[in-house]
Length: 337
Ligand code: PEP
Ligand code: MN
Image (cartoon, rainbow, N blue to C red; front, top):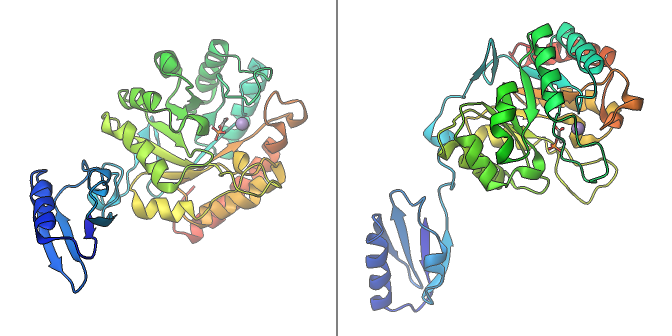
């Protein structure tokens, strides 16, 4: 952190501020320029709020040098995190593909889709049992029955299950069935929920909030990690912009940005990012090309009658051909799928 004093700040004011900073346990390196003095804070400033200096009338501005996230920061953890889930992994050389319907709708539906995506090479099954819907009148998910059906699909296919947990009260229940707990975009800054999943030992798939900056996203991962759970997977799923043609705007630049700033695995959701089934394939390919560690894709055997997100779901046959082309792109990037 760097504190820039106002031109004309008195020696006495500067010395007083220096003593205050030192009392917080960091060292100060002072540079006196022609017009103003700069105090460089040396040491761990992560717990120091810039606002405590900004209220000082002699301070012009504060510059932050280090990012406020620590556990999620690649600086303190240079090697990529690889998360092990059963026999599968997320992060590292092998690209993970999570596929399945938006929501679990029936036994026949989830079993059919699970078997098909497994056949095509998916490594995880997705399916919502508790759904965060914009309208309270829309299908809210099969809840516990949905969890039971996911369990059945896991038994039949061996695919580990990714499913959303919407509230802290449901973590225990959902954890009995989920191999990975999904925190949805709308809950990315539900700090109590983040802290609670941070106290479990389940890997967490954290989706980027609709209007969250990269830094806010990483601070949410930090919430989970600060409670002890280091197994966080970051998911770019599109953000709100002025563009209304697509459901959201897929921010593919978030992939290299997150991978530069953090050691955590980064995956992309082209389904929620675009809201259109025919855009899923090109953007899934693009995501792997820019270095994503995996994808989460909505696949439905009867999209026209899906209870949720049919318009952005691809059919199993299309998923199969997509997997084949993704293999090629992964190979060019020296990765496997
Ligand atoms: C989902 O994955 O089903 C979902 C609701 O996604 P998001 O939270 O990204 O909207
Ligand atoms: Mn969905």
